[in-house]
Length: 491
Image (cartoon, rainbow, N blue to C red; front, side, top):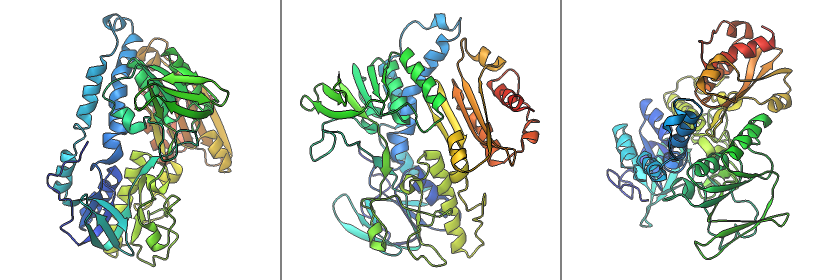
């Protein structure tokens, strides 16, 4: 897995530009593209593959692994289609299709896009080296400094966070999979242990189970614990139906392995030993701030980069014209690709606006504000059933001091009945009673990912319930659940 060096050079041939972006994932790319659109020049410094984690080891390859078996499961829920499905998924074909989405882990296409967008790509490790300066260490060890006339943006993403389990930390950790190894696996292991039951753990546990692995999922609490509790319960039931051994409230104590590739053993706190061919550790991620040079401007290197609503770094005196910005996972806020890209667009635009002396619209929902990052974060967990949400959970709304009413119901409408025999789904709507607007929605069920944007529009638009009542859902679709939610509320 080596980046394409076509159309780029290991060491920069530019020593000054308007904007330097450290990190060439989707967030960094969008910052640079918006800055260029605003009339500025931009350099992106990337040490690995341009396009970042999402393109090569996360969003795209993981969904490529998931979708084929979901299509099979959907067919099996429908008489007539069920009879045409005569065997399991072809794992080799699924992996080959996965490879096509990563372009074989070559970023030549991404580089070509960047060059076409007038973005200069520099290969190497970038670090802040004082005000408006970035030091780049090229693959051959040579260092060069790039001066930024307007801004430096840190968009270095996040790195895996390992739990305090004996055998996983230290100078010689037990060989195991992280999300990268799992999404780029060359074959499906006969058996797989998954430690962690967040989004990554749940998605990949089900994907590999459906591709033929005997999977055991170990959760320290419940599944998808940051979501509404009912969502995790429904996903756990579905996983058990797929043959996954789901262990709830199980604490890992130690990990060991026979050599580098022999069976791996996970010992739980109660003494239970679990053995499999591979172990996937999916216990979360942390902001990648350790070697970004933030200490050169007096900022910590052991915590997320704190930013304001325009993405400008806080914790240092930036004056009236901020020069240091952060965007994406490195800030610790809503570590999701689409939310990072949303912030990136605002950051690129505000840098350009400030450079031109234009007015900055940083009030709530302003063009240069990242209000959705605080009020309307959207997320889809691509398990089967899918778990989709926007805004606040009921518990989060209560913590925020809102006077709320919560409406729950099963997704049992004509559209879902036609969609699949035995369709199992659930919906929750959280209403701010004082303003009579929706502040949070969760949908759980097959193919609800395409339904959540309607909820996002309602939350972001702060649509009064009385007006939302007039948004008539088409019949017969799963969107009819909106009618049932509003009826259950009392409209």
